[in-house]
Every structure is written in structure tokens, then in C-alpha cells.
Image (tube, rainbow, N blue to C red):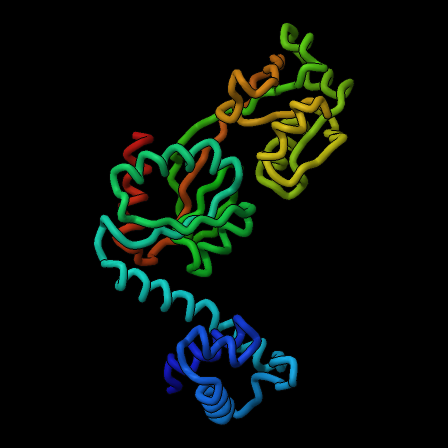
Length: 293
């Protein structure tokens, strides 16, 4: 059985692609790193790196090994971090992955109140797509994914709804006269229209709504994140749907009525079943559920 320490050295070499930088990160010598990698290669019976004056590069075997080693090492290091920071419910670190909608509609406010009660708990938060967030939980990099519906989760995952919200149609000053009117979805084809890019949960939701109305969705502008929608609309680039919780009276935009209300959507905390969570992660999860009770 090869020691974890050998794989830890290999992991750091892969992170930096340089033995000297890996040695600095591990507070050891370059010669020690080189010796460890040579020993690991001997024990595995294959070369892991190609050395050159510019540094190192993967062999096919090394790249394949890194695919498996990365997840294990990051899990070990997370465990070490939890222990060194105190394995208690009022300390430690919570790892989250969330979409823009979840951040703005739920996480920002919940984190503010949570930190007031548990100032010793730290957070590492990734802003990512729904697909990336689920993969982050699957790999063990994140404790939870915080996502907006619609979202399909794997069979070994669970989700808890923590907030309901509704999308509203908005327009900028150029479309101010529409604020006193009620538009049908077919009417929207008469105006420039902004949506999120295909592949996002919000866009899938909108595609389904338009399909149910028997109308093709024809966006004039597609943006990558919900956070980009508001300034686009404010600058009169077109009309767009945005979570109502993200719109304030000072945003310089106007809500426009539609003949049919948009269906309610959920923001959910999603996690992988049968994976032990740190006390800090459990505390955060319980706090989220208490706020939506």
C-alpha cells in the first residue's frame, strides 16, 4: 500500500507543475520532492511526469492518476482543516456552491444572519452553474449546492426547499408606458427580449413556459448570469424576466404585468446522501431549514 504522503506530494506537483513550487508549498526541499516522485513512479511501475528545463508535464499515466488522486487529497485536506479549526458546531468551514439566483435571492441574506449567530464558522463559496454545483457536491468539494428550480438531481442526492419566489417581467425607462398595461406572452414577441443562455436552469424554465403557450422563444440578447439581466434591462436593451426578490424601487426598472402569472419556483439546498457532514455544515443546514419553517 502506497502512503498517502506520496500522493499528497504528487497532488501538489500537479497543482503547480513545478517541483520547486511544490516544495515551497510543502515546506520541504526540491530534492525531497524529486525523490518522492521517483519512488512513487518506481512503486507504480510507470512514469508520471516528463521533466524539462521549463518544469514538468503529465504523461498519460500521470494525468490519469491525478484524476483519481485529486478528489481524495482534497477530501483529506478538508478533514485536516476541520480538525485544525476545531471540530465543533460553532467553528470550522462550510463549503457551498451556488448559482447567481440562489446567491441573490437567498444566500446573501441567510449568510448575514447566520454569521451574526456563528461568527466562528467560515465559508468557501463557489458561484457556478447548476451542473457544476452538483458535480462539486458529488466530488466532495462542496458540502451543499444551493440552486433554483427546475433542477434534476441524481438518485443518491436529496434536496430541501428553503424559499419560494416568482419571476416578474421588467423593462427600463424606454418601456415605461408598458408598466400600466398587461401583456400576453405573444405580445412579448413585439419587443426586444433578454434571457439567460441555453443550458441554465432559469432558461430551461422559461423555455418550458413559452412552449406551453405555443410560442417560440426568440431572445435578442442572451446573458450568462442573472446578475447581468438587471443592468441590461436598465439600459433599455429589452424586456426580461428576473426573480422579483432581486428588483427594488431604486433599480430604475418597471414591473410589467403579464396575463398569466409566472409559476412559483424554489430555491433548494441539495446534498449527497450518506456522506458525513462536519458539525459546521450541519449547523448551517439546520439554520437554513429553521428560517423557512
